[in-house]
Amino acid sequence: MLRAAIVGTGHALPQRVLTNTDLEQMVDTSDEWITTRTGIKQRRIAAEDEYTSVFAVEAARRALEAASVQPQELDLVICATVCPDMTLPSTACLIQAKLKAKRAAAFDLVAACSGFVYALSVADQFIRTQQAKRILIIGAEVLSRYVDYTDRATCIIFGDGAGAAVIADRDDGSGVILSRIQSDGDYADFLYTPGGGTRYPTSYKSIDERLHYIKMRGNELFKVAVKNMCDITQRVLDESKLTAADIDLFIPHQANQRITDAVADRLGLPQDKVYANIDRIGNTSSASIPIALDECVHNGRVKKGDLIVLTSFGAGATWGSAVLRW
Ligand code: UT7
Image (tube, rainbow, N blue to C red; front, side):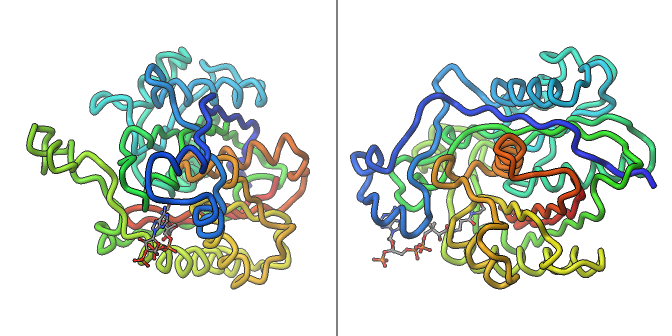
């Protein structure tokens, strides 16, 4: 049976580090509050001349090299992002051009922090139906462009970066066993950026009203995130006839260390099976899982044959989970 296997990963981060101590100078917060409430110590922030596709292309080149796949061999490029380079065209097309992936179809996927798991699920469908053999999926964000650095509730969380994976068809037992994605638009106003779209186009008024910045009902989102990340992880395990004890490595979206801990605890997963890098990277939305996965490939946390579960939750609300054999 053909499966969508991750055959190469890569990630890219901005050089600039924004520490909790730096944030103490900007808003009424403390390193102690941020560390205990989120687990974050620092995050990376793009320079003025860096934008989403800059990191996406760097991450993609690394993933392609690791996979020994040439850009012109790609059938599809999916860029999961809520921070496109521009409104039009898609960032995926800009990435395709920079990579010279001439044969590929390219499109963006908007599922916020769940973007990478959504993209993996889409790639899985293309592979299973043999519509594609090699697919590049990327999660890339420069959220700092939308963060209000006077709002202490949001500016402490988010960071910038990109992660990428090359997906190829395999029939050796490796690859995605099962993926499931879900949404509930009733939670749309828990995390949103109202300005800049067709409802509140950019104007002096929209800027005066700060509509171009991210708004978040963090505490309410927290509870919905924990519940749905647990439920969907349990669902993919049940449908795959697996249990939490079968998992070798759980890589959740890095939203908040307390969310990760609560989800792991409810699923009965010991800490050594749960990956966390939020202390160094912050919450990079769709980039968080592929950045974490690439770190795991390089630091030896992932070994051939391992059972890996990726679970995400984000604005929309959107959530999803994928079980894969490495
Ligand atoms: O990426 C996927 C989507 N995002 C998420 O899943 C994020 C989910 N939410 C969270 O991570 C957490 O809700 C936050 C980290 C955003 C906030 O933590 P919390 O424990 O839920 O705090 P809270 O919003 O309930 O606020 C508690 C208190 C408030 O003060 P009062 O009203 O109790 O006096 C806030 O004003 O903490 C205050 N507060 C802060 N204090 C110091 C909020 N932000 C800060 C801050 N520094 N940065």
